[in-house]
Image (cartoon, rainbow, N blue to C red; front, side, top):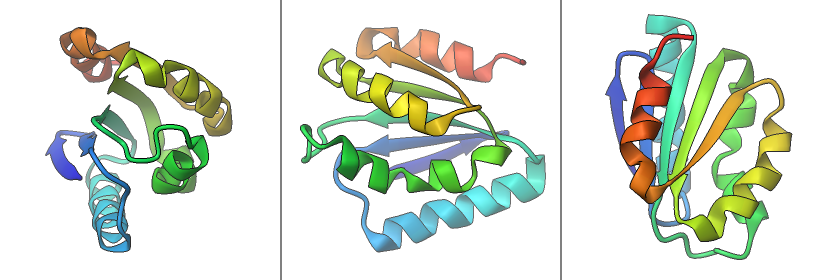
Length: 118
């Protein structure tokens, strides 16, 4: 997992299941960003994910979203079309957060959407 920050946006590239150490790292970044900006946004890119057929595994790896839901303005998800149904199913679990799904060719559109004000 790779993590980058830009203003109140936390960009995460997930290419494998998230370890406990990585989870701790991301929650530390989130805490710092909330301290600096109040509300935050996520730009999540999902590369190859080992448990492709398991939305539960992905939900567990992204449980920090639920934990910080009150502090998240919106989330952009970029991944392969095969994941679209999984993400649509997961959207309901993060009620109250604006979430948009983008296919890989729409990467620039996703960044524009997550970066624009309200």
